[in-house]
Image 1 (cartoon, rainbow, N blue to C red):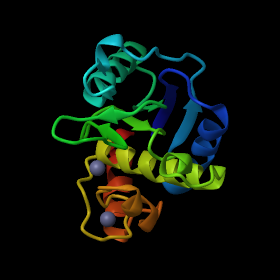
Image 2 (image 1 turned 180 degrees about the vertical axis):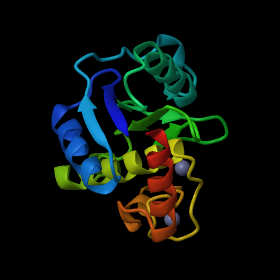
Image 3 (image 1 turned 45 degrees about the vertical axis):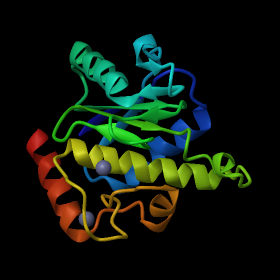
Length: 183
Ligand SMILES: [Zn+2]
Ligand SMILES: [Zn+2]
């Protein structure tokens, strides 16, 4: 699977570099490329009342970007703004199940957001987990009931910290099968 990592708006490059290396170790038969091009955050995605960005509208732009390029199986967008999805106060990311686009936000993954020391290793690991999770959705995976599996739903940062960056055996097989079908 060929995955493009796309910065949407301003995103620190150390996180992106760590993400690229981490993903290659976890998802089988996949290659990653950090795109030089960056996408501006779509203005219409900003909700003035909530002072947050609508993740579905950003995700839609990423899908359009993917369709225009056509040279990647998946595009993973990364933003560093606070995002929400309808019905949820905030989300760490969003993806189309069995689709071509995924999105993660660094905003609530930063230890500083929770008043902790801004340790980069913690941010890198959380980012990796959320990225594997959203790419898993694009491979057709649903949420997994196993608490340690990366496909377990994260309701809060505690859930993200508790789970591993790896798929459980069952999710791994499903992901590997979906990837093999991409050709
Ligand atoms: Zn999910
Ligand atoms: Zn699982």
